[in-house]
Each structure stands twice: as C-alpha cells, then as structure tokens.
Image 1 (cartoon, rainbow, N blue to C red):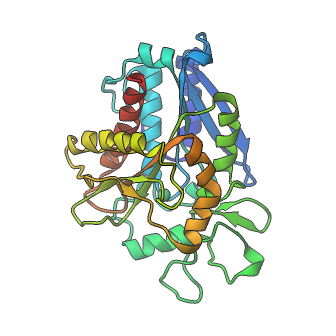
Image 2 (cartoon, rainbow, N blue to C red):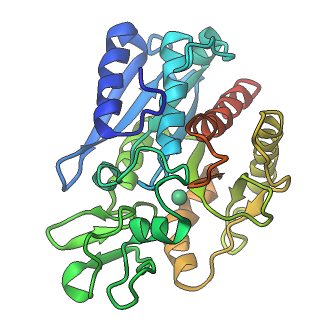
Length: 323
Ligand SMILES: [Zn+2]
C-alpha cells in the first residue's frame, strides 16, 4: 500500500478494496465530470440502522493542488472500513458506535481532472519553490511569465489570453469552460455535495484545504471560519468550539504547530462575492469550517500532511459522537 494515496486510480483501487472488505457499510455515489472522470461521494454507516436516528456529516476537498486532503480522507475511510489506518496502526475511533450513530460522507477528490495533471503526488518543497507552485496552481501568466494567472470562478478560454497548460486548480466543465470548484455550483465538487445532501441532509461540513503561508511563520496549520460578512451568528459559537477541538488535537501531534485562534475567512471584493454566492445559504443551515495545512514545504512530510487532515476528521467524528 502506497502511503500517500492521492491520485484518481489510487482512490478507485481503494474503493474496490473497501467494497470487498466491508460491503455492508459503504455506499458509492458519483457524478460524471465533463473530462470523463467520476467524482465520488463515499458514504460510510451501518445502513441496517434507520437514518432518522443518525447524525450526518460531510467531508470534502475542492483543490487539486492540495493532495494531502485526499490522502487524509482515504486514511480515515481506511480506519472506518478496516479498523486500521493506512500505516497499519489501530484506529482510535469506536467503530461500532460511529457506524451505528453517524452517516459520514466523503468527497476525497473533488477535481480529478486537475489532480491528474499535477507533476508530483505530494508537494513537499522538493519539486519547486512557491512561485513555481502557484504557476502550477493557476497557470503561468502569459503576460507576466513566472507569475501565477488569475483566480476566477468560471471562465471561457476563448475570452482570455490563458496559460498553457491551464492551472490545475481549474476543472474543465465544458468544451471551452473552466471553473474553480469551490466557487461555482457548476463544479463536480458542488454537484456531488448537492446529490448527497439531498439524501442525507448534513448538519456539518468540513472542507479540507492546504496553503503555503500563515499569519506567523512558525504556524503550519489553521482552522478557517466563515467570513464575518455572511456568517450565521447562531452557528458561529459551535463552529468556534469545533475549531478549537481540532486545534488542540493538532497541538498534541509532533511537528504540527497550529495558529491557536480560528481565523475568519478574510476575502474581500470579487473573491468574497464568489463565496457569498455559493456558501452563504449553506452557512445559514449547516455548521461549516475549513482546515488549512501547510503545503510545499520541506518540514511538511507526506505523512505529516496526511495526518494533519485525518486528525482533524477524527476529532470531528468523535465530537459528533458526544452530541
Ligand atoms: Zn484550498
């Protein structure tokens, strides 16, 4: 077993393996993306127990250049199905209780089209510096070579002097159209969420991310809260409590140095409006927080990137069990 599963074929091999090991606790949904890749929603629960008595929680990742999120989700699903993590260590989750009381849905690879174009499996700083990394992420700007291109929600390649190749953050959603998955409902990332949410009516959504820079240099992970521009004041106290539980668990793990305070999303202008349009209605109904775990840095080994995400998910599952 490879210890940083993040590619589409690795996810599909795992799904087959999990279905063989424990077919009764796993349901696989998908949407067909324009590029031909399936974008999966994997749901784990004891389906012999009626859903009405259970808590439903969603975990996802939109960004192809943040593969530790995929590996972390695969690690947790492995624990739920086999009782061991992908390194063979026993899970700390009480599986009987979790499977009987929760519905846990995962979208481990929200943009396989972008992920498959990544030149490396894990960004650990050995392939390129951050400037080059950002050019992989959004494309190398033809009008300003060596610098990353624009950040757009949805765009048509005929309307721009676009990078070649297009940045891996973008999902191709039509012959000429591309999208950043967490900024438009047209992405496969939102389509699979909407499909599963219609079935399970999630009460919480943990969206997993990675980034390169933090408020202070010694931090390497943080939890993001909703923007103050459109958060639901009735939901925020629980989001903040949840965030602190994740931050405390990270602080106990060797090599992780979390920003001790959760950070509200700080976008302004156009980016804020993309988020308001796509996320504001969800924040009114669901508890939602995000991880940010450091990417493309030598101290962030593949195992540390993976474990930061899986710890955050495990804390969220344990928290759900205490409700
Ligand atoms: Zn991200």
